[in-house]
Each structure stands twice: as structure tokens, then as C-alpha cells.
Amino acid sequence: MAPLDEERMNGVAQDPVIVAEKLDLTFQTNDGAVQALRDVNLTINKGDFVSFIGPSGCGKTTFLRVAAALEHPTGGTLSVNGMTPDEARQQRAYGYVFQAAGLYPWRTIAKNIKLPLEIMGYSKESQQEHLERVLKLVDLEGFGEKFPWQLSGGMQQRASIARALAFDADILLMDEPFGALDEIVRDHLNEQLLALWERTGKTIGFVTHSIPEAVYLSTRIVVMSPRPGRITDVIESTLPRERPLDIRDTPEFLEIAHRVREGLRAGHAYDD
Image (tube, rainbow, N blue to C red):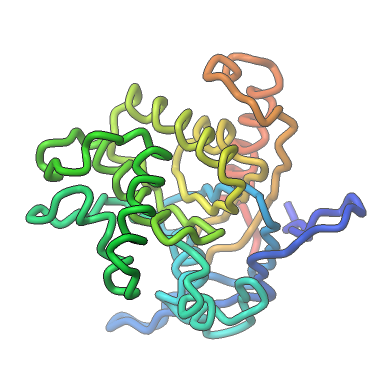
């Protein structure tokens, strides 16, 4: 399957937030060059919830890391809000949620969430205002004085999301944040994340290995091939924005999941 032009083709004016054009990234290792991304073209528009799915090592996380200025491309370009990723980082354009919650065990949840605000020089009054707002957003009111070890894994990950939301960036980059959680907790956090996205209108880039998770959460699903990572399909969701969990049993949901599965199979057969 030939890669699609990832910009929406319906003629409706869009507001691009992240734009990749002919993006390449090659790592130099002791065993030689490893091409993580090849010729990636993708536009993520304001308010999109875009999930990246593909086999391990296909460049899903690498794409997010380039957008966050944690890696730098070796070819092509990627812009965030019309700026380079480094400029966007300096402008605090995005929050980043890693696979592990990464909370400091000696700091309370409140102090973990306030940490980026402290670094950025927010006043104590402003830090407290932001803290109270994001604790409410992630349903952790009353847990600010707890330590990470006193919270469940799901609650820790919600605290990590709150920390990324604390300085109110319009873009949220999430690198498989629920992958280590059991299915019941994961379902609950998926519901909460959709509710948070609906309330805030943020643009979200989300890495996952789960087909049901990608279909349930996304307005668009980016399917990637094995290394070197290329986009083999971009699937527009036809599901309504309000999505109860039992939508996963509907024909519409199963049809999209089938297309994702076929895209992953096609990616393995992608002909160089």
C-alpha cells in the first residue's frame, strides 16, 4: 500500500500544528547506521487526537521525540506551531508524557506536578492555581499530599499527565502512557483521557501498540511499517466524539480496527 498524503483531503481549512515533510532520522551506532524514520510526511491539525501504531522499533516514539526536540532529524523537516521543535520547546508549546510516570518518590504528588512550574519561575500563587486546576482535570483532587508510592500505577500515570498539563500547553505528546497497566485500569484511563481531551481541546499525539486503544481514542490513526519507519496508512475515524466503552462492540468500530490490522500487515510486506 502506497503511503497516503497525510494532510486531510476534504477541502476543509485546517490549522496545522505539527508538520513533517520528508522526515528522515538515522542513528549512528557501534554496529552501523540505523534508519529509524524514512520519508515521513504528516500534518497534525489543531484539536486532533492522532494515535501512532506499528511494530516495536518502527519509529513511533522517535517521531514524538523529534517533535519534542529530544531527537533531531537527519533529513527533511518537522515544525511545531510553525517553529522548529527547539523553538517550540523554548515557547513551552507542548507537554510530554513518558511510558513510565517518572515521579520523584521523595516529592509529594503536588510537588511533582509543580516541578516544571518551579523551574519556569511561576510564582507560588500561580503554581497553586495551576495545581488545583490539573488535579481536578485528572480526578486526583485530595491526593496532592500523597507520595507516589501511596498511589496505584494508574493514579501515578494520571499524576504524570497532570504534570504535563500544568503549564497549559496546547499540545500533549504521550508515549504509550498506559502500556504497563492492566486492562481494567487502562479502559478507565482511556475514558478519562477522552473526557480530558473533550474538555481542553488540546492536540494530542499518542503512541500505542493496542489496536482497540488506537481506534477508541483517535480522530486519526497513523499506521507505520517496520524499520525504517514509514507511514503506510492514515485512517480517519468515523466514530462520534462521545464514545462509551461499549462502542468497541459496534460494526463501525470493528471495521476501523480491521483496517488498522490490514495496514499493519501491509506494512510488513512493504516493498523497498
